[in-house]
Length: 299
Image (cartoon, rainbow, N blue to C red; front, side, top):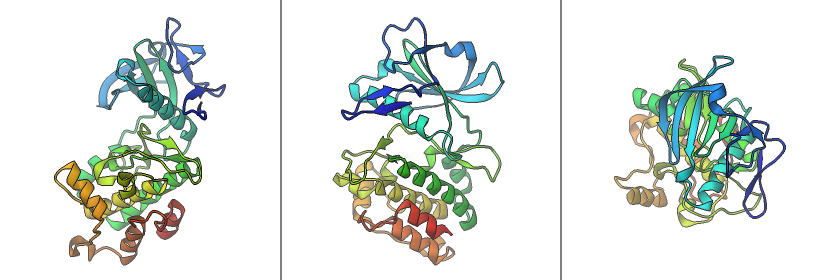
């Protein structure tokens, strides 16, 4: 995999067994040593989605027939050195976290002249967000199962020194179409490493889920717990706890953090769930529950 050195650059190491480049590549951003062509192994299919730097397509393995997903990042959209660094970091972090049952598994990476392709596990159930849209909200029993898996993987990230920074239902995928499908955390494009005691800077994340300290400047892993608390609130009620019609008004509501539990539906939800959410949506990150403490509160 790649490692981030002291000056923030990512370099591939000998563990990069699944990194390939085409033999004709003139300028590599990943520096892979092995040569192979994506289309020699995989057939690209329908488009499944898109992101900041490229598109995600279904792809099938010619050898096994397995259907996977391929995220193709257009290199001409990596305008700045920071853009390149963030893509390297995304690949590195996915490589490190792959293998956890609740993380989308990165299989292989191919670099061509114009694209970097990330071949990864396909989650046939789609986004948790779409299931939430369909059902409105989840029962407390259903939400507890989903949320326990989410917090297990958040704790795993934090134990590895990784902060996701963009936890939201759109980035939580369902492995299968079954009603009891396991979840898979995806999209590590904003994830980064953090050292004990380190404070991160910069406004990163999605408006409804961003922690107030991220907006102020200076935050750590506790920002992920805040985002997860917002997710739990939405899973149980179908509404975000902090609302606004524009991005700036959402940010104002997040800063104010006036947490309320309207009688409909919260009178039908356990007091322990409300207590857990209060502990996660504590404005002071030093007093906010840790991922480990949240998991303890789910038992």
